[in-house]
Image (cartoon, rainbow, N blue to C red; front, side, top):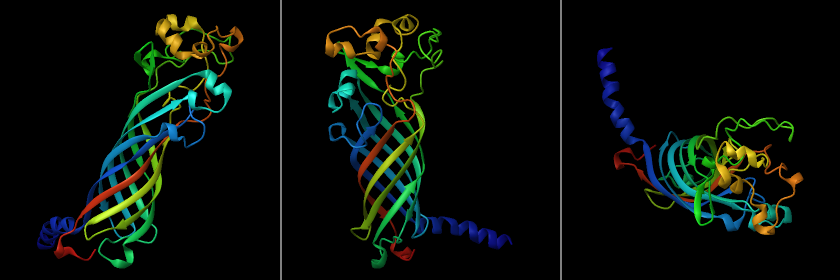
Length: 283
């Protein structure tokens, strides 16, 4: 028994070495869908995105990868075709940093050095952690919107006499949260060790504040307890376009759509290098 265990222990490094590990880079675009966008795809809010991955091929059908991605997302009411959206006059930009672990399934199977399996469509879904920080510019200064508590976060002011929903969120939303990456792609071997993939992916979020917009406009007095005059001006920017004060009956109107959460997307290509020694030619 001791000899068997010793043989297994000594063979682990060899078998690990003979498995197909891939290391590569991602380049593409990032964009967002939420309260400050019209539809899933808006060309004006596309941004460059980059990343890197390590992939372990379990067999010719299944792989698992760990990746890090960086991009930017933005939304702007000025790009809207709907007049009411343009009049709202809100905008944001946020960096996105993501770390994820994602299982992949190859529908037709993939083996880089086998002609029959050099091409395969694939699908995936996994789990990730992302960091964001929505910002905007007002009076020539860039403001971190989460810190300005634009929807009354942390205020103890009770608004039940002015609006159906009483009170405000007790804490600002977290800037680091969990996401679920999911997507579709194709993978193709372009050499003995080089893999090419193209993928379109979405991130399901559990927050509606990627763009800092979710619920309603709040009374000016709320900001006496939180972020002052600038917080109020960042919350409601409608008068900047009209040059007129917002009517009192509109000051507690819906600011966003709180029934759906935001999304962000990565689309692009990945090139990976397979570490595959000649002595381990067969998978």
